[in-house]
Amino acid sequence: MRRHRALDAHPIGQNSRLRSAACVVVLLLSGTSWACGRTPTESPEPGLASADSLVALWVDEGRIPGAVLLVARDGEVRHRAAYGLASAAESLQMTTSTVFDLASVTKVMATTFALMVLSDDGQVDVEAPVSRYLSDFRGDGREDITLRHLLTHRAGLPQWVPTYYHASDRDEAYDYIRSLPLLWPVGEERHYSDLGFMLLGRVVEEVSGQSLDAFVRAHIYAPLGLDEIRFRPPGEGGARADTATGVAPVVARTSRGNPFEQRMVHDPDFGYRIAGDPFVWSEWRTDWLNGEVNDGNAFHAFAGVAGHAGLFSTADDLNVLLHVMLNGGEHAGVRLISPETVAAFLEPTGDRQALGWQLPGYAPVGSFGHTGFTGTLVLGVPAEGLALVLLTNRQNFGVDDETQYPDVGPLQRAVTAAVTGID
Image (cartoon, rainbow, N blue to C red; front, side, top):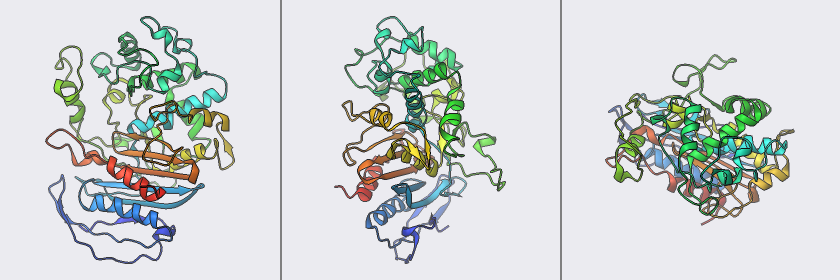
């Protein structure tokens, strides 16, 4: 099977020319061999052509199954392309409308956005203690933790625990998190923590009186006309027929079960240690995850809706949300957030961290974004009016002998460098 990238109509997709390239035969998870080929393009913007070639090369060399790349400047999409396969085992082609499990990109595109809206409306104060909104979050120093501490990963909370060993729903998960001792002094050190964003998701729910997914749908996604970004894509395996076309969108398949997370629990030398017997819980998933959140805590303890993970989206919907940030809180005449709130949440706090948003050192000064474990990246570059979305299904080829998935960090940095022109 010859594999091409799919291009929408835009400058980089015009006047294409065929360039001969060596074909590589790759053994897919299904055991099927195929020859890979690609059709490079000429473009008035060499950076976009370079970024396109980089992603296509990673796919053609079999380093990742597939990807979607979208680049926009000043709200105008300049490049939108799909590469490779959404599901290697089924040879399901990637499309530019493929829906991806965003993993930790949820932290900014759902939870942080929700807190920006609530902050802008005066319903939350990021300097206030968490206990103002979660009245029982007290004791052993917890009363000193503010929303800012959670947003900047400086609350002293554990970075990760399998809450599903102790909880079967969100309330039990909250009770368990609230019982855990702090590991570091509040406010002194940054230790990236999923637990902090689980708490922030609960804050959104307590303040708004709505579930996190209902709140972001009603107050963020719907006003912007975003149809595909959501928690828990409905339908079997995440498939959902479009009401206009009757066609179900393609969902990028992630992993077969959670082998990485299972090793986190069972192998004490892997860098994570849990309290108690790792064999007291055995509900590990073994099937392919398709439209079902990959993150174990989000799936088992939070029923797919959590502040740290669980969001699914297309590249186009993510681009709109990035444009809101780049455009001072407004998109297409719809104002969600004031420019002052946007600026406050993007203010550096040290350690390349803003409020919720990360400030990657490999991008131009002032850039903000976030990555996700499933292989996702969103990036905004205010100085260039640039929005970059790179979504991969890196887990779909499975883990290697060290129970590791392919590292897409080098690709994310290389694409960013190509598009922004930085070294």
